[in-house]
Amino acid sequence: MAKPYVFVTRKISEESVELLKNSFEVKVWEEDRVVPREILLEEAKKADGLLIMLTDKIDSELINQAENLKAISTMAVGYDNIDLQSATEKGIIVTNTPGVLSEATADLTFGLLMTTARRISEANRYVLEGKWTKWSPMLMAGQDIYGATIGIIGMGRIGEAVAKRATGFDMKILYHNRNRRPEVEKKLNAEYRSLDELLKESDFIVLLTPLTPETTNLIGKREFELMKSSAVFINVSRGATVDEEALYDALINKKIWAAGLDVFRQEPVPIDHPLLQLENVVAIPHIGSASIKTRKNMAIMAVNNLIDALIKKESPNIVNI
Ligand code: DGY
Image 1: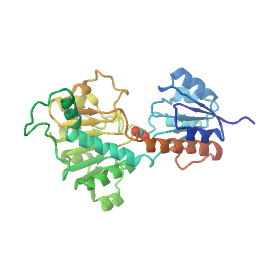
Image 2 (image 1 turned 90 degrees about the horizontal axis):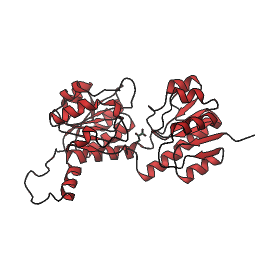
Image 3 (image 1 turned 180 degrees about the horizontal axis):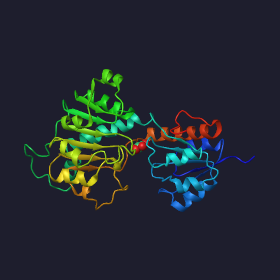
Image 4 (image 1 turned 90 degrees about the vertical axis):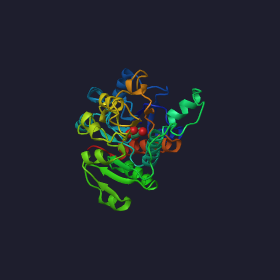
């Protein structure tokens, strides 16, 4: 009997591809760019399993044509790029890679928070552009992190790991989440707040929620107006959780102090995007979980999820069905 066919949409570690090859016929898209839509559609028609990235759009058009498809394994924790309802209707198992990337993503989140608060990117540009001709008392003066109040929106695994880092800076930790997390409140001395209370009280607002219909445009004009004029806004969730025009207006009109953004509505963000023209924006290219070890671990987990889903019809990381 022919082995099931698996298509992998980006080059992943050899070790993880070898693992797949033990059970399946495998094809990997070797080019370092997103698979063109027509190729993805063709491959999906033939495939029993897809191993995809957050940049691949798995919509109802693709799912309805993919007659053999039984499992989709995404190498990410977020799966807003997959039409979950269509996949579920077709009995296709969808898996993600939670947990394995929490610490790396929390490191990046805290790094982005520090970079934005203490103007590290701006200061680096200042030196490289030859502008450092004198020292002065308020040169590149930023916001204090130690002892400040951090408000975490989305207290899942990554939120908890960010809160843990914040305790090292003696920060007051506030959070907002769909459900209260009494164990986190106890362990990390975190206090639950309504969204509006959190926005009003926090010096740092860190957005970590998954993108769902409820969180789309969660932070817009009204929400920025509730924030302190000294607030630093950090987004490591998905671009569509924020109204970018409202963010731009809030920054230009000094309603908030600065923003650190790992995610954008359109990725890669166009170089002429208004937010990129502002000195008080730190923009990075969706690298939340991008440490070498973590990316390798994510690939292995995504592979194991696909093997489990195709062979055993189960996996610890199924997000539907
Ligand atoms: C994810 O896995 O969803 C993250 O956005 C990756 O950085």
